[in-house]
Amino acid sequence: MLMDKTQESVWNNCLKIIKDNVPTISYRTWFEPIIPIKLENNVLTIQVPSPFFYEYLEEQYIDILRKTLRKELGSDAKLEYNVVMENNAFSNAKPVTVKIPANNKSDLKNKPVSVPLNLKENSIKNPFIIPGIKKLHVDPQLNPDYSFSNFVEGECNRLARSAGFAVANNPGGTAFNPLLLYGGSGLGKTHLAQAIGIEVKEKFSEKIVLYVNANKFTTQFVEAVRTENVNDFVHFYQMIDVLILDDVHEFAGKEKTQEIFFQIFNHLHQSKKQLILTSDKPPVELQGLEQRLLSRFKWGLSADLQIPDYETRIAILNKKIYNDGIEMPSDVIEYIASHITNNVRELEGALISLLAQSTLNKKEITLDLAKQMIDKLVKNTKREISIDYIQKVVCDYFSMPVDLLKSKTRKREIVQARQIAMFFAKNLTKSSLATIGSQIGGKDHATVLHACKTVNNLIETDKRFRVYIDEIEKKLKM
Image 1: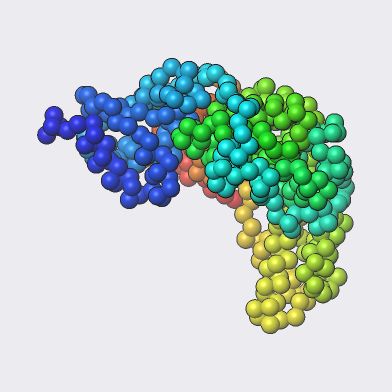
Image 2: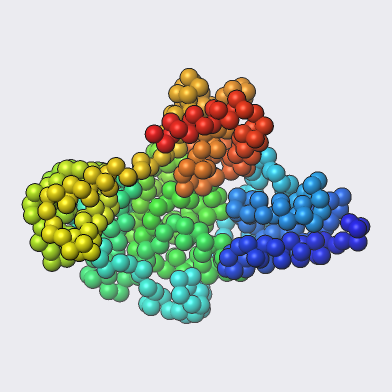
């Protein structure tokens, strides 16, 4: 009987199922810290250590939480989160209870992290390797193949490369701080950013250089909060002389991560340390990031990397062939360069595919072989679907301007179109819920979750609505 159940027994039964359905490391990170604190009227209240923790659970694990809880308590079961931050850097924040499904994002404003600057160097925990490592032994996390010598300069990237080389020769001492490299996927942002780091290490061996992806930075921060090591985390990053942060746009919607990076950024910049950032868009077009952070991105230089022109594509292929010690007819190189035009990654991928075809089938590399392989590759290459493209297709289908979809209006037909756009953005892109919400009407991740649930329900119950979804999906995948 339900009256015999306690919050501990209900939660432990839920955990048995959850443990079998999520990776071990995810279970340890996101479920072991949870404490069941109350069970009343079919409402289970669980305590979590931070707002980010709650948001991540709601975004990634709400389905399995809902199913396991309903299995234990019935279809009317509900879940509440009690966010209590104690004995850590955010101890001044007040506890907050948030119900699921949440309608509004918690507006928690915590005090900045206090960083002890008198910590001994060898007592700082390095989130990349092991606790207690000395700063001189920090692995820069750089790929030696991403050097300046392997980076082909062209009209499409000349400004970015020149600025990068200037920074590498005088890190922290130029006007290019921060240096933000932006452009589409596969255009060489990561290569150039790491090339700067490699050059700095060669010319200034005593400097501490570190490359980290924004997602890895976020994961490290979450773990630091969970284990109450935020001060060590911040102080570690404040020791870096040249910090290379890749894909900074991935911070969109992650308020606590942005807050901690804001403090690290300020310390490094004021200390004349070099910051190198990469992004898919220039600062003015980035959404979901705090204005105070965006304003700092504009302090230095923002340099774009564009789609390489024909001559640059030829040079890239020749460089790759030379480095690999391969001979290839010039007409084959020209054919590849003429037909693979989107980005450097696809260009190099086409070359590798051609070499594989030749080697595995023991065929000579000829123009005919290149045509067969490239034509098939181009035909099978799926166009990347963006959130902007989804909004355009949805608006065209319902004959409404995109600006109306992004507006604050609550008219029923606009709200429904907005929900459909969110539904497709979640299913057809790799963007986070926070990013989707920020780009579609400036909404939060909870609104996107609600929109997807609404669309799924209508698909199951409304035949006419299901036709809308099917027809829009066909247009998106054409």
